[in-house]
Image (cartoon, rainbow, N blue to C red; front, side, top):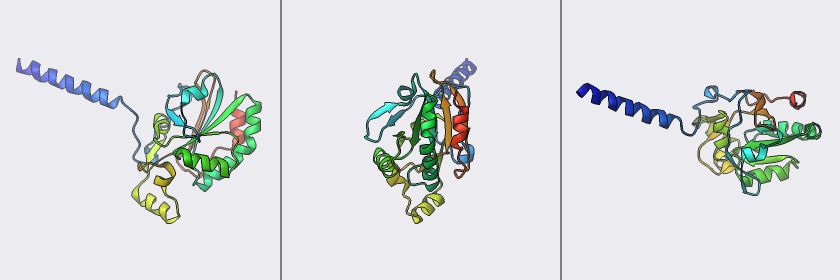
Length: 206
């Protein structure tokens, strides 16, 4: 009888643990520990905000449309700004193939608006300041305290940029999603200095 009670308690404990583990995706402890979702899967849904602070969802943005999703670190990142300039040049070709381009970063709506205006960005950029999309795609990682301090020495304040104190970023990534929400191409790189050439994006568009 005692053995049965113990086994029942263990089973209940396992169920609780399993349920907790099946909740919202977590932030990886480092870029090396991220687990980006792969080609062939359906995109997860997540709440995002546009440059005006209006809420939307990832699935609402991509439903029925071939979409190039670009995850970047923020408007404060010079590598991201350089890649954005390349994407701006490639944008007409992306559109000519019937696709839209949606960029996502942890920047707050205000920071997103500033970035869009400052760099005359013609495509849509959305705020993922709570990292819901970045976590759902397995891209989010914790920035260590030493790096946060180093960034501040360069005049980069992650809290000011995102409006949050999570000190987390996504690894840069590009996904091509078809009209059904299926990921048909996936690319990410642990080294934030390496970015996918827009020509490769155009080549991979269906």
